[in-house]
Amino acid sequence: MKFSRLLPLLVACTLLFSACQNKTAQLGEISVTIVDLQPAGATLLESRAVLTLRFVNENITPFGFAGTSHKLYLNGTYVGKAVNQEPFGLPPLSTTTRNVTLMLENIALVQQVLAMRGQTAVSYRLDSVIFTKEGDDELKLPTQTKGTLDLQALGASR
Image 1 (cartoon, rainbow, N blue to C red):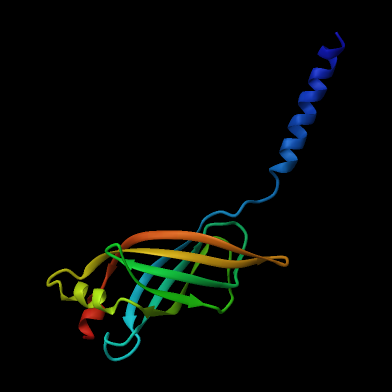
Image 2: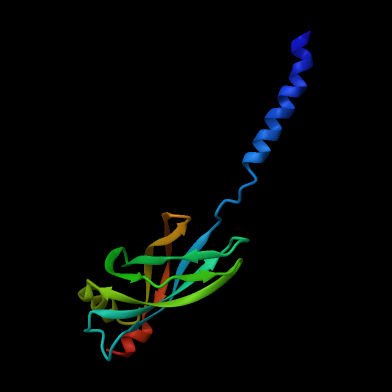
């Protein structure tokens, strides 16, 4: 009999404590997509390109970036890496674009893709790591984006 009286109290306490745990906001989606890829110099024979990235904050809270790192794959093959060490912020539910310098490590692949006549769009995969700070702790948030990229601007500058 005593147990039946304690059961409602036990259930109420369990619900109360579980509700308190869920009140902390969790980080929603931060996505990174490629907007554009341009040669850094007069030709693509150089080992650098300018990668324009779009950052999307789907959170209801602002997000601060301590830096970012990106690896670009074209048609499934690694092309190069870009690192941004400049901190920036992103307001809630908003987007921003940033230009980063892509160090091309596989120029031959890019030239091969450009040589395909009539095909200027290629599939890409962008593996990004977002660096942020929470108090004294540095956090790394990996994200991956897939899509297609129009290389027509690169082809025009050959």
